[in-house]
Amino acid sequence: MLFVKRIFKRGQRVKNKKTGKVMEVLNYIKLKSKIMVRCAWYDLDAKEMRINTYDEDKLLKAS
Image 1 (cartoon, one colour):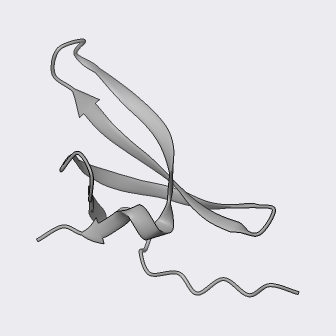
Image 2 (cartoon, rainbow, N blue to C red):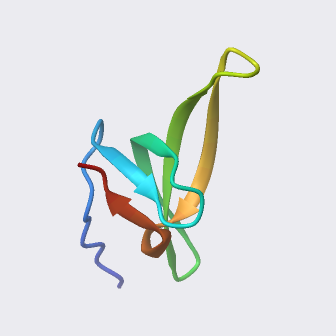
């Protein structure tokens, strides 16, 4: 059995290491042996909310 140690809490702001986007954590998803985090952010160009799933290792806590 795999126990998930969650680094981020729901509603917390996180930053993508690669793109630098600041997002909000929605929930955690366990896919096979990976721990994924579903995040949402506001797209200024399209003027709508975007939701995507990221690997927990690719996110940092936003200041």
